[in-house]
Amino acid sequence: MYERMLNKQEKPSLEDMTAYCGENAGLFTQFNEWLSKTYDTDREITFPYGNQYGWGVAHRKKRKLICNVFAENNAFTVMVRLSDRQYETVYGNVQAYTKEYIDNKYPCGDGGWIHYRVTCKEQLGDIQKILSAKCS
Image 1: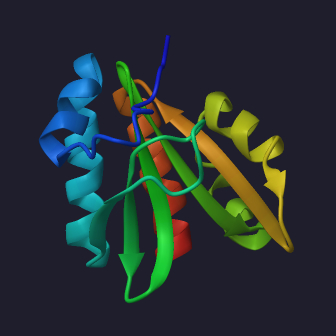
Image 2 (image 1 turned 30 degrees about the horizontal axis):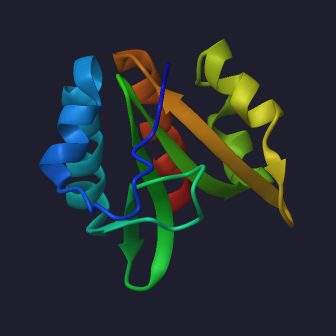
């Protein structure tokens, strides 16, 4: 249902990735532009972690990775790592859907990784809160 762009031989443009997000193309554009403008991130289209991840947009501040945004059929997924303290700052202000991701994060040091799928405006708002906690 939420297939990713997995053909490593064909590097997509940002427009191709946006179109692939289908009904959530506007949210994909809104999120990438918000992150670039709000936190002055550099964007790069990459195929970073192998065949199950596919093509995504890497957002970096200087050389530090902020997150990866993977285009999916009618959605997109944001892969981001935060510390436990950063997650705690947003936990009380997000919907149950988002809390589920935080509760089940992939542990890494003091914190962990989430792969947060966005399919609606409320989820977009929550991932923006998470990125704000990471970048502030």
